[in-house]
Image (cartoon, rainbow, N blue to C red):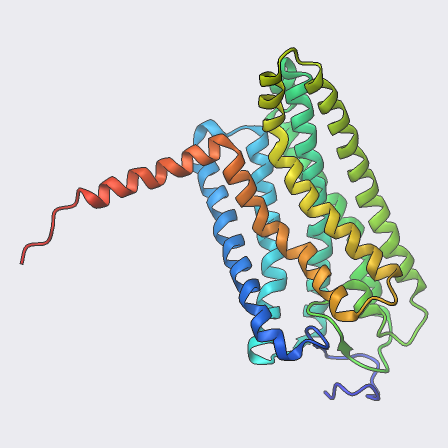
Length: 325
């Protein structure tokens, strides 16, 4: 199928992803840090899952939520990076129409799930600091499972109409998507029809997911900070704040680029296209890499367990007898 802008078709069998228009010559070099980010995200999140699985002392609400976050990050990374790297390395730009809509759904739904998990983590820190005596009775295993299921169903069901609406539009002008992945508006803007329902519904999903989530997280941390500043000593305040510092870091790493990307995509008409695409990729690819690093370094229990694994393996290797000649 020709990627020409004058191609005449109504139901494309595939789309063509251009990658980063304007930076084609640099895409191979851009792929190097992206590949490194992908490798770190895979290793880091799989390590978090393995450590929590093996260490029974980490079978607690906060670490269950971290496992949910790790799975979400793995899905986000694998939904975007492999196809993006195939574009940059092998010029494999074609993506099947159904695969494109599937990628669209996975990206937007799991980004919403990640936002919901941050709310769950904020709630966990709020109860642990503001009402510690009731933490174990409020956040039982069944409650944690219901929160995780609620985050999954909320985002999954809300985002589902996006690809369904995109599938019903006629595409009679072009099948070329100026992006590295099948982003919702980038796809529906190709339709030769009134796409206002898709556009308005996309805004509705953003409003219904991000606004309540950011509001709840903000409210939780206001209450947490009030509780911290009411502690009698500076050492107690610093120690208590350290328990939620990692969570605050990953929230900022997720919401700030997300908010920036949304504003640029909706209102930044004079912003260069390649800059918008880079920001959109940073929003989705940097948090899966940073989350396991931040939680692994700043969460004492995970860091201690990780050190134990390496310290146990190193003596074992050193104690092995030398092979005889």
